[in-house]
Length: 364
Image (cartoon, rainbow, N blue to C red; front, top):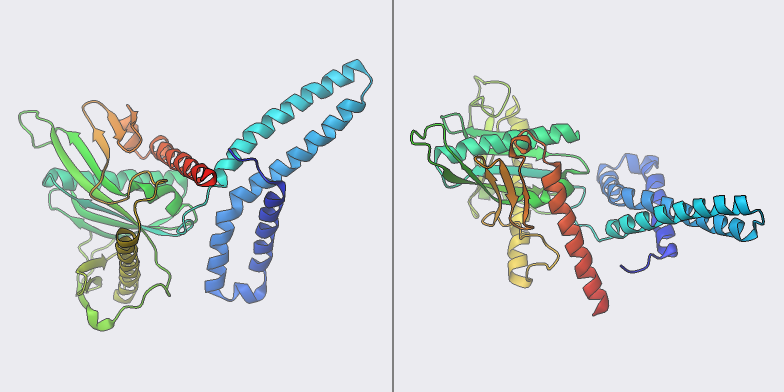
């Protein structure tokens, strides 16, 4: 790892404090757009600034302890100072490693809200049942982590499963925790309807789409087809007698979004439009990446929904992430929302890959 630069770390701490001061400015608090930008920047720098402050403080403590140890004549006191110095240096070394990882550049979408979309793939009814299982798994995980979310749309299969589930996950940690969940999730298990006890394999696709900012894209109203209908009750806490649910089709791309969670058609339409904007921005980014760039070396998988990223094997109580060759035999706990080990392993691999890529760039 490259040596940490004290001046750079002090600059990070100063930048963080300056952001907090600007956020307290009455003119800024009245400007929602500016306040949102500063909040994201604060979230991006928060952990780095905290670690940098601790690192700088420890560095000063070590220097002070070294001076005292050199000046001390009493053997007993000198031994005590040596032990304290050894402890400080050990803490400093561990903190330096943690800070090196934290200094790896974050994605531009870090700190954004995301749309978590789960859709049935191959496997018929069994795939729809697994959509419901993954929906339950993710929402339990979010509940345990204290991350807010709103259910945008749920479409039932009619046999207890879901064709799709769309959840807006909000807060500063939403993107950072979930962005590597995109791809194909495969399940291997014996369906309840299987009389001969044969194991079936089904697939579900997951996409994680950062919420678009208002000024990122403009949509021509003439390109939209807007349908309204009664809420089915599957996606919300109610069944309306009025046509409050909204589905919007973007005709040029064929992208369809819906929302039926609110009792108000106006609110559902606004939420659906926000989701459509995010999908269109994501489409533009994907097309640009395909046209102008190769896959990033630092990526742990492309995020393409066609890429098989994880297998959930019920007979073996096993979950495997194929991108990093990670396997754990606690599938029963994972499906209850205890995803920390799986997600943590993938995020750690991503950070290490980015760090190696950064070191390679520095050498070249």
